[in-house]
Length: 215
Image (tube, rainbow, N blue to C red):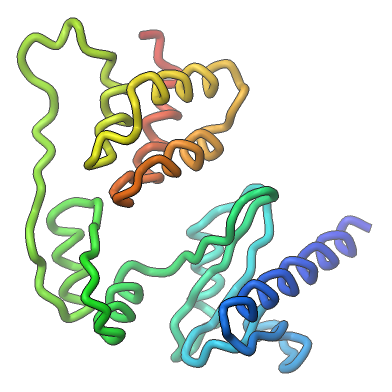
């Protein structure tokens, strides 16, 4: 019965994703319905992309990407993911995203939150030059009147200061009290960062560390 329910939920998610893509102008259909086979994409309709759909409350992003990469062949692997009461998000390798942006020639500026070496590798793989680097130097001087390190790390992730100290502290407290999971808290905070620099993966690590901290 559990296997049947899982397959039924997966089918509903694929139909939802196909409908979402059709709303945005793509002739999308559920993949296995038209092609069959275990390695068929969950949704077809965007040439050059292999789309896996994950309509789930929990899961491993990297496991999902590994599945998509393994089945994509020469196409670009993409995971479409949505939780209940949340928007669809598209997950893909940074190198593939940068290549797509370059080929589209949209004139966009892309922020990469990683080490300098990591950014260089992404740019090299995409065949584009790195433009500039912003260094995080930490917090120095008389810091005794500042919020604690966990709060500061979260609130300064947005380049425009749109993640308030009070919001970061509330999310840390709620994670400690079990009122929110780290993933839920990260998703909520990221909504306030209009520039998109907020790093969900790093924020989740900060929240998980803060959950066990006594400070």
